[in-house]
Image 1: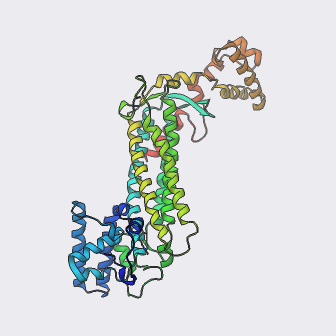
Image 2: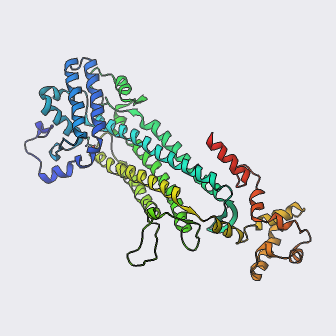
Image 3: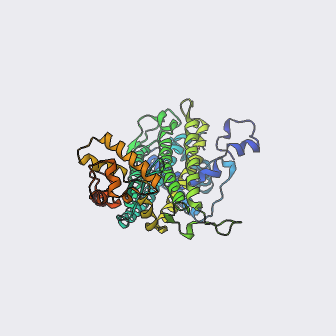
Length: 453
Ligand code: ARG
């Protein structure tokens, strides 16, 4: 039976009911819906809008419904459209007339908005915990790999040697900023819409401050129309999710490359790899590929909600019912991706020997060789030119720079001395970095110390 049937002469078709119903997905909000209703019923009782007696009957029945749902004893119906009307219907079935008083001074518009905000508050906490586990794992790995030398890349070409710890700490910083972004987003999710009514406020002597305290919101939204109409908090949440997925996706791309025979920098644990149905030798990095792929669907969720909200006249429109599935999808996708990713990097094997070997070739010490000549008083631009010609020569000879003889060095510049070999050794190149935040061993140790504070 429809709670709003009074004004209608005809019933809607089965197809229209199915099209209109959101219970299939918004039942996920049952706990938030009941929590919001309990606070609302308490407020109605305190304010004398319903009696204290009625209020406690409603509250007790709602608590029981919550228990019953958790135990799987409750069957939701498509007839009742959404989670809000399902629970109200069950309440009235259980306590009769009193149940019908719960919706006094409330609309589904402020009800759904408060449910959604409560849900996102909870899930922002869960995402933060998953991000914290990831940054913790990155810090542990970095601590272990302070002496693991590898090539640093630009344009995916070998550029300058770095340590694996340094590379991992770059991601540590990205995921830490993701945590900051979610925390900041939370401050705007954390505002109470309940008590706004349909759009214009209500005629009752309600206490929204009490509702905020009861439900743990730090602020009351100051304009009821805004409170029921906007979903910017959810868009912001999805954009935080998208940025985190983008970071995960970049890292996954590297893990996929690194686990190829061409790189052979890491080996992903069997537990996070799959085989091929035809090629017996294959071990594929499917988890990393899936996370990279799933970044696409999370961006899609963000675009969906932005597009849903674009051009909506104030205040509530049923379009807004479409806000939930993209958000649920992103929450599920992000949490699963973070969990799998963290376990995958915790268990991967790092082929430190191959990383180090790769760091020796590719002329990554060319900048350091140029800096050597600068220290002998030659202008950097000229040094760049000299070393460039040396690299060209070394390539034609099939040699690394540090394999050139002293005579060969001297042909390019008189300023070279025996100490050049020491200066362009791979660890020296790393050690020599002095700027704040560099890859030098000391700087990385300092970065590790700073993040452990
Ligand atoms: N199921 C609806 C939603 O998710 C609840 C709000 C309905 N409000 C209304 N005025 N029809 O948006």
